[in-house]
Length: 88
Image 1 (cartoon, rainbow, N blue to C red):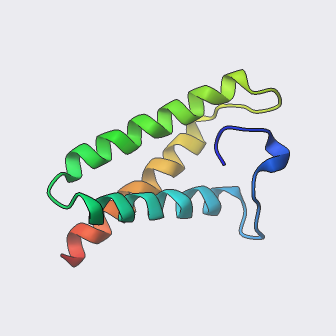
Image 2: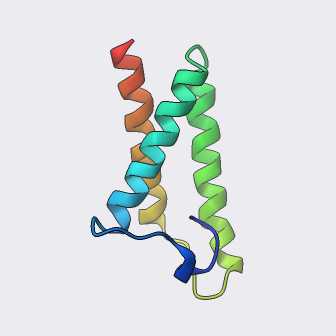
């Protein structure tokens, strides 16, 4: 849960960066499988969404936008997209 109260964010023992990476890895895989001929568009939409999610945290109390979080999300999505591309 990228935008919302911090106490509602699901957490695991893996830590927030692994959770972010994994969530966006799944997003990248899902969108790549759904739109296999539009991977550049899929990547652009996910990057834009990541940026908007981080920016939206400015309006939430007790949340903070962070470039590191943004980059981890993009890395997860890119890994998912690349993985689908390589396996096809």
